[in-house]
Structure formats: structure tokens, C-alpha cells
Length: 324
Ligand SMILES: NC(=O)c1ccc[n+]([C@@H]2O[C@H](COP(=O)([O-])OP(=O)(O)OC[C@H]3O[C@@H](n4cnc5c(N)ncnc54)[C@H](OP(=O)(O)O)[C@@H]3O)[C@@H](O)[C@H]2O)c1
Image 1 (cartoon, protein in one colour):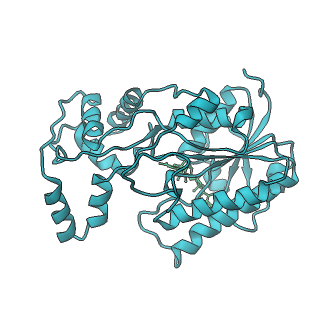
Image 2 (image 1 turned 180 degrees about the vertical axis):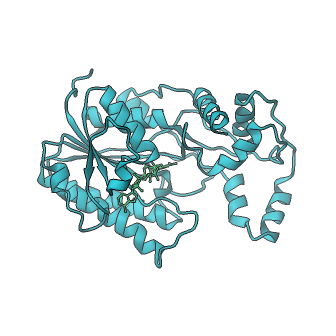
Image 3 (image 1 turned 90 degrees about the vertical axis):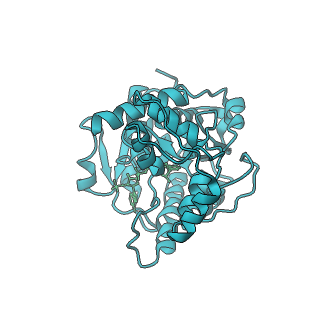
């Protein structure tokens, strides 16, 4: 157990993919955890040893008093309105702002009032951009191209305002796509096909992608909560090496015990098919790059991801096989 054993952590988004793993890791490291959930129904999805704290909908008027009443040392704010496959909101952009930006500000104001030592905000690389030819660092310009990304960047800025010149230290973490047992993200269909040995026309793609395995992200979140050098900083985080889409799909195939089968279709053909089928954006996302350099986190905190990309993929593909 570290020096923070028995400290109380408030985790929002505790029922989510990352939040569940974070709560488990915090309990294992000796923290007490208050798992904030929006409803009794959500709470039923928590493991039995988690103590839920009902907070209702996150937004500009959420009442955080019960959750923060007891001596919380660190807040991990993960709850967010994330990309929606079929968005039913009348005004999705306003909804992203209400939950992600105004909701985060409301929690930070309460955290400052209660003297919380550290506020760890899980933002997203999408607060910077969705695709980029150059490798991103924390110094790269932010030009988010989605309502989700804009709401995350606006949240980062409002949190800096709310916590500035107070005793509450803000740390912002911007993960790339997170994967792990339980969640394969946007590429899940492709990776599942590769794992089953299907030939895929992706051999001509030459791009770079960064990913982070869920347990690596959780380890980094706890590191930035504990390390004095993290106070007031913004960090990108990843598994380390970036991969091309063909490399990723090949690893998934090998993790499934298959030889990768990649057909060398020219990317110009893929773009034409995308245009003809009205799926230009999806094809651009497939072909494009989004690689990050997380050297700042490694240098400032001497942090290293405990799991390699290849180990992370193997354990994830094992889950895919077992779940099939
Ligand atoms: N997964 C990724 O690839 C990825 C990449 C970059 C950044 N991130 C960020 O990492 C964080 C965690 O992501 P995740 O993948 O764990 O997300 P997730 O599995 O979709 O979980 C989202 C969590 O937020 C809660 N939530 C959403 N809207 C809410 C609202 N209006 N009021 C109260 N609670 C609400 C959900 O509660 P219910 O269970 O009640 O719905 C759930 O616990 C998010 O901030 C996300 O933006 C994720």
C-alpha cells in the first residue's frame, strides 16, 4: 500500500468501462472509494464491494454535497456524455456542453468548497483533434472537430478557471481511444473480423494510431493523483508505441491464433467507395492518423505503462473469444 492508503477518492462514471477498473484498482491500493452513480438502476451494475453514492444526473445543478461531505482527498471525474451511435438528443451539442462542461464546472466548484486536494479530470485527445498528420504533444494546438471534443476542451478551460488560485490542484489527462476486456471501441468490428481470420482490404493503409490499454490508463490516473509534480499539469497518455491499422489488425489476428490476411487495396479506391456509399467520414477515420507523444508524463512522473500494447491486445482478444 502506498502513502495514500485509506484516503477517500470520489469516482464519477464509476459504472463505466474505465470507472469500474479505476474503482477496483483504488480499492486494491488501499483507498476508500465513493462510487458516484446516477441512479439505483446504474448502481446495480457495480460489483458488490463498491459503495455507491447516488448523485442523479450530472449537469449544472447537480447536488454534490452528500458525495463530497466526507473528507474526500481526490476526485476522479470520468462521467461524461460520450460519442453516441444514434444521438436522440434534440440538440446534441447543447447536451454535450450541459453534461461535460457545465456538469464538470459544478463538480469542481463543490470540490473547491470542500477543500479537495486534487481533481483529476479525464478529458480526451479529441479535445485537441480527431485526426492529425503530426504526432501530438501537450503543446500542439487544440482544434476539436466534434461537439464531444469541444465540450471536453471547454471543460478543461472552465476547470482551470474554477480551481485557479485555490487549494484544489487540477490535473487533466487526455487519453486516446481506450481498449481492454469489455470494450474494443470504434475498431471493434474490424478487430473481431481479423480475430476470426477474415481477409481485410487494409494492406495499403500507412497511418499511425495511439491507443491506451484500460489498466495503463488507470495506473496513470492514480499516478497523477498521487505525484506532487503532476499538480496543475495536462498530460497525454498512451501504451507507448503507436501502430498502423494493418499492424493493429495483424496483432488481433495473431492474438486469435490466426495468420493475418491483409489485401493491399489502394487507399484511393477506399476513398472512392467511401464517397459513393456516403461514408467518407468513416473511411477518413480509418485511413487517418492520430498519434501522440506521452513523453511528458514519462519524464515528469517517471511513469511507465505496466502493460505493453501487445499484452493488452492479447488479453482483450482473449475476452473477445470468450465472449463470442
Ligand atoms: N473509452 C474511450 O475510448 C475514451 C477515450 C478518451 C477519453 N475517454 C473519457 O474517459 C471517461 C470514461 O470513459 P468510459 O469509456 O469509461 O465511458 P462509459 O463506459 O461510456 O461510461 C460513462 C460513464 O459516465 C456516466 N454518465 C454519462 N452521462 C451521465 C450523466 N448525464 N449523469 C451522470 N452520469 C453520467 C455513465 O453512467 P451510467 O452508467 O449511469 O450511464 C457511465 O458511468 C469519459 O470521460 C470519456 O470521455 C474515453
